[in-house]
Length: 341
Image (cartoon, rainbow, N blue to C red; front, side, top):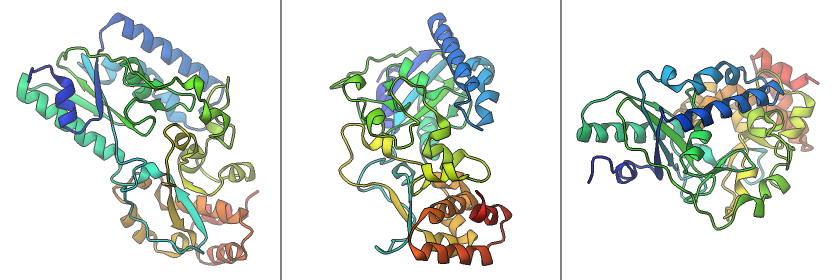
């Protein structure tokens, strides 16, 4: 294998697809700057909600050589974590058919995708070093200042669909993105993704995939209306309008991804018994979600979201559970969530 056969190497390490960008290329720098300006406008219009870190990270996302010192090349990969696959597993207890239930997005099954992506990128780095010698590399999977979807689309791994997700030829939108910033100069590899049909022939995510209006044809994506934002990123209490938007989601939302062809044949959401969630010890739940994507939200936010679901329920058991929570919970924030407007 050639030392620059990055495609074979990356796939052997677990990547689904791979591309490589020359970070010093003038056209890339121009495109990156333009994308940064567009993001600044999007944030200025308030679409970023209270995710202040998006604005704080903006300059670092544009000046990648400063963010990742000495980096000359960026290897971008897509990978899967059995997202949307029937065999994907999760750690939550089995739910009784009659239980009060909230749902967790299907992408949160299996090991946390951040960890999976880092393992693949680390393996790619080590494999490359065996062929070209030692060099510095910085892995990034959704936690560092990187325009991941922009990089992946620029490199030809896919296109950014109306739902603001990367759509790929291999697994539509059910992929994750990882980037390895290398001080070594790796031969550039840019692809041309081919699809059976373009997004504008479908647009299901705009027409029927988003119940809140966060995704609307001809409009910018609005984080403030996104269920994933409300259940994962939103700080503090959820007001009545936000609770109504959330439906019965505890963590994330699948609606704009499940309608993307080919549609999932079965419901891949993770059902969670709300009584179990509220009455189990916080320590038990933390141990259960450790190493999964749900760990990012934490127990208190899951319970906050559960209270929001219970407050909308017409089932008398929901009121009983809320009464139990009011008597037994110690968290001031959760107690306020039970009664706030």
